[in-house]
Image (tube, rainbow, N blue to C red):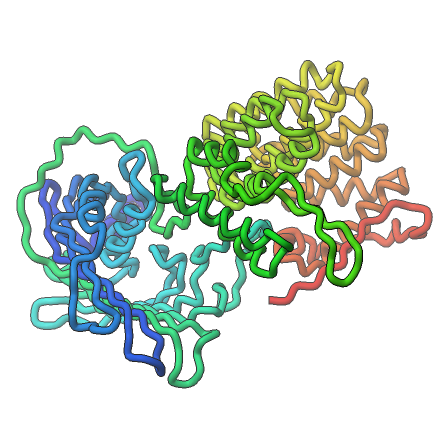
Length: 632
């Protein structure tokens, strides 16, 4: 009986802790929203740029944990930089208002915390980002409005450390202050670079690039178990320009104030298949118009003019500008420029031979078409990927150009599902290299999409690769089998491929190279995928040495105490010095590694005693080496 009563008390306590707020189902709560942003270069002229956004925010409670946001009466104004007191309606306000007011945004409300957004399909990214900003002001992540706490909060600014200070109850309201140092935020920046990087988690206080010094301070008031008002002030200082009282500063003040309450209008029939979080979405898309096409052509003309007699220092910058302009074009506009490239710069002939002032040398200058050919693989848009696929399929470019373009797939920074879909059909053609290139593109996509295994284009790509394996990897074209296994390992999606790969590495009739590639395909699979068969291969003393070592490495990507115990027992009874030497040196290296991605295995191995049985001659036996130095 006591246990039963304690259970009831525990449940009641848990429910009570999750009831800070009460938004009545079927009611709509109307708030007045204002945002005022000022950017200025302090210590110089008095000019400043100001932007004003006003709107009416309607929050409707569809259920206790399911709310919706609708924006009304949106206005956008800006000031004259030389006369900050004069405000005028900004250009494009009508389109701005229409896009923001068009759709309702549903969101999950977990007693103050907003963890999931369910927008309508095809909601423009910039619209969703603005709504993210409004909901970030509406969010309160503290557990108790009367108890100060430090916690981690995810909103449009990133995943940040936040300090909540309970200010107590006033006449009729509960007041809370919130402070963020934006340098502590992760998932905040975006960089446009072809260099692929891997993020990692760290305990250091500064997690963002220290180019901007940013803070956010909010004052929130609550009344009748609901948010009454909030005022947030963000201050950003660009540190490279900062020098005492001279600095580039942006200040943003955001307010949300309760206005009224009325009956809601939700009908109950509104399924939303797409889910997002509050993090700012850095992806950029803008519909192409004729002006964008003309701007790209004019940029190309400028390059031609700069390279008319020789390659001037301004050409690289102009070429980079051309890439950005081409990135804004849709497929038809980009294809049109490609087709007319020879005629856009009429002054450029097919080639030009010029004598240098200083020596008799021949310089062959690129024609206009070559500038376009060099730019297309760097653009990295869906339109450019489609153009690459079309030109390769129709054999309108040379084999060397096709190889160069396909190699560029690994450097696309922000791939989309549509890009993968465009390239699926090319991997069974005459370009075997495409298999690895497309898989690299798919991996980059999966790194920013945790659910990429459920994306139809990725599923279609993986199925095509599995089909290439044939029956137990026995196929006429062994090179395609090998490349397909490596591509599966690149992507890291395990749905529907594990059984096929297991058939490959378990097939003793295959070459060792193919079996090794099949085992290595596990390298990016989730640790939820069973590696028991690989562990059995490692513990089988009769198996091929290379196969055993590779199986061991695949298993150790997801170590556990159970796995370590089996490895230790196998090592103590090991009969092959090559395998024993490699495993022993790997484990001893892991005990001392400073690699931040290997700290889990280091923690497991810290108290594991390893016999000195395989401290063998480095000249004769296999060994694992790691030299790692980590500096945060």
